[in-house]
Image 1 (spheres, helix red, strand yellow):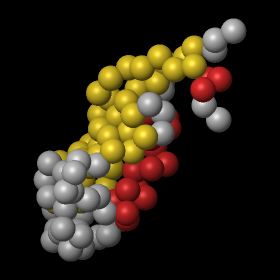
Image 2 (cartoon, one colour):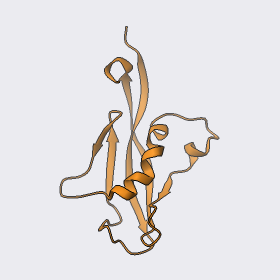
Image 3 (cartoon, rainbow, N blue to C red):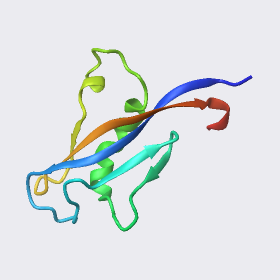
Image 4 (cartoon, one colour):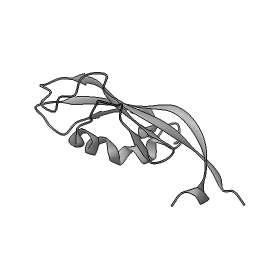
Length: 105
């Protein structure tokens, strides 16, 4: 018996760098989270692990439909923890996907 549920695929994009980009990222750099757990970074690009660490705790919640007035449903911006860089990232839902929980851990 299938156990279907829906998740969003996400894109996290650098939308501003308010300091100096020591890590080498640029506005427009991004990664995608698809099919529940697949992280995709465009060929020839990178994503700073410290910026990634700032956004990771929010991704599982952003993959799900939340209550309309939940702050996480409305808020989309995340800042890198490095105060000298101040990399600002935006989490966007790019697709809705039906998954089967039996296919996941």
